[in-house]
Length: 124
Image 1 (cartoon, one colour):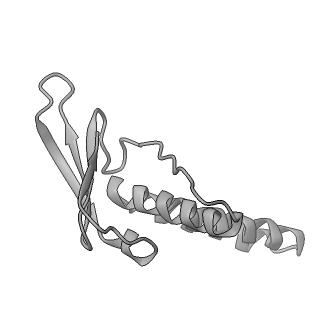
Image 2: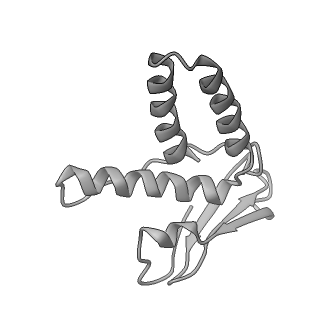
C-alpha cells in the first residue's frame, strides 16, 4: 500500500520527534504487515491512487503513473498484462516467461475510488 505507507511514514517521523519511539516502532511493524497483505493488482491500484493525488495537487494537465512490480507477495514474477475494465475491476494476468501462458491472476476494484474507466483497455 504505497500511498498509505508514505502517509504513515510521515507520521512516524512526527512521532519520533515528539519522543514516542515505541509507538513509531509499532507503527513500522504494522506498515510492514499491511504491505505484506496486498496482491499485485492492489499494489498497482495504490500506485494509481498516489499518482492521482500528486496529479490533483500539481496543476498539470496530464500525468504518467509508474508502477514497479514486486513478485512477492502475490505478484507476478515474470511478464504480465494489466486490464482495466469499464466501471469494473483492475485485473493482472501473470504469465510464464517461456510459454507466455497465464499462470496466475489478481484483481481489485480499489482503483475505482479515484479514477473513472470509460472503456476497457489492456497494457502488456
